[in-house]
Length: 552
Ligand code: NOJ
Ligand code: CA
Image (cartoon, rainbow, N blue to C red):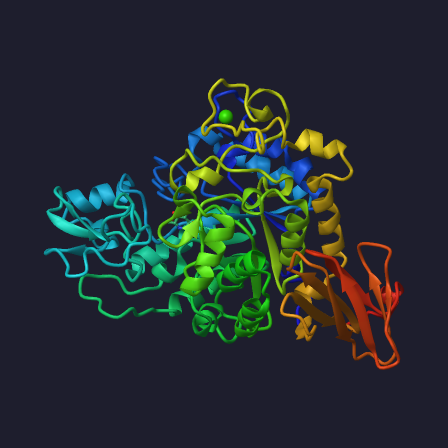
């Protein structure tokens, strides 16, 4: 095994340049602002920044509608600002990955303009057309309720074009070898500018056969191998993190079975079951989801998250489970989206309850993979349900009690800063929390520190330990002759559990986060009492564990 797979134990922080920090007073965040906040991110313990799309774009889908893959949207600064930011990040040992949006372009992309206006242009075949309205023109929408079809008529080309997402996002014909070459060229460009890889947008659609006659879904996974080979050849330690909300039997098709496709994937199945566990207190379906997604190639890794830039998609839960989560975390219609999800931020979903927030984060940080934090969640930011669709949870970062939360000096910011009683910037902001040792921000910093000192979680073999309770999840990780055990009580009530630690030599469980340790009985069984929403991080054995870590 290669020791230096950095993504196995990274702490990823997802940020939107547009809403993080504005330095030139135009109300829009910029790269210079993000660069000035790198010390904040370094202090938090972040090791990798995931940049949401920052390319030139009309931003009708917040930048997921690109008009130029080789540039920086002018509102965020220049390419020079980008390079300065990259340099400062590198100086702090922070890697950067960029969103790679290659399933579709903006309808305003010069390629599409040329494609629609000139039938003889090579760009015509870069998109997906049909002479007649396809039979399935109103099937397969990703944004039901908002998006009306997946095919639209273009009066200029006098043809129908395919768009898996909104009608202003025509799909690229990813089977066309020239398109594939161009995708690699885009990757090559940003790698050359120093990124450590990509979050690959909408991957299942990228590899799907597209066209008016396509019946049952069919994929060509070979392109993933091509992408991986190109990436690794250009930059050995770069990685690809796929956005692919697929069923477990598809996982290995995306990872590849011989370490030859995606390095990482977001674990959507576990994400949804984490929310079900948080809503119901029942960890059993989560246990099933963890086991179903256990298998992965040796160099591959899962990315775990709580909330992200989109709605919380609950589409893989049963109807009953989904209703349970809706009832607890998004009961009003205005909180729900696309018939399947919740468009709120984490803190309001958990009623701002500190115990549950810690529980949720502690759980995420100890699932068998790499944690991904969303900007603002480390201080418990809220949402603004007056904003449309997913924008409710995309408001500017709350830095201080100064006007506009210290995000901008402009009177109007790109999206309104939250200013309500519970989650407004006067109540929830970085400056206040930095000064308060008990704040969520400082708690997050400490938990990240603890997570970094438990590399067993990212690297180790893991198994679920029986706790005898449907409400308490215990996972044991083993790596290089060391072991940690992570215990979470999802219930509001306290529980007594018994844990069997089959280690003849190491019978104690040392609490990593607090001063309460546990000595096992003669039979190797630990009796633990865990308060409602309680969590424990234990190291098996003693504090001299580093002395016992083996080399391989
Ligand atoms: C997934 C992104 O996370 C989402 O925000 C976007 O709308 C779609 N892909 C389309 O690019
Ligand atoms: Ca600006």
